[in-house]
Amino acid sequence: SSSHQTSQCRMSKSHQLFPWLSLFLLVLLFHASHGDVGTTSQYSPPYTPTACYGNDASQFPSSNLFAAAGEGIWDNGAACGRQYQVRCISAVVPRTCIPDQTIQIKIVDRAQTSVSRPSRDGTTMVLSTTAFGTIANASASSINIEFQQV
Image (cartoon, rainbow, N blue to C red; front, side, top):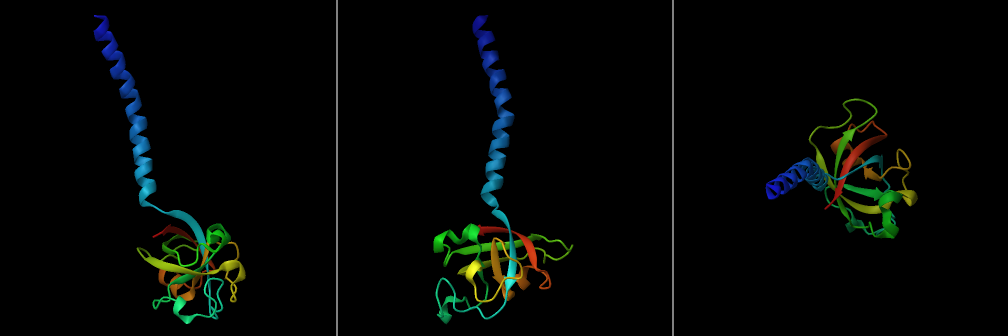
């Protein structure tokens, strides 16, 4: 009878653990499929020279979807050339975001030293006017974004 009690005790302990394990796996899954949350502003031409590639015109993707890195992602210049998927998630003014629009941008500059000044300082990244206008109403000075390096 004591071995029967032991197995029952073991069973109830694993039943207590199961909800926590499920929660942990759910959090892990959610985290794996979503990027970081940050902010972005926008900047307009002139875009050169950039901190990454100077005056080289070939640095800009033909789509004009590029950005300057804020200090949080600049990484001592290692951010140059990195690609990020970016989507607008919210803004101060309702309906600023263009729903279901995700873009892929390339980092070509450092926001702190860009020739053209951002519409707002201190954001995670600063998108080109083309990139910003693709995911949000261009009249906004900054938006909240979800971003993920690809």
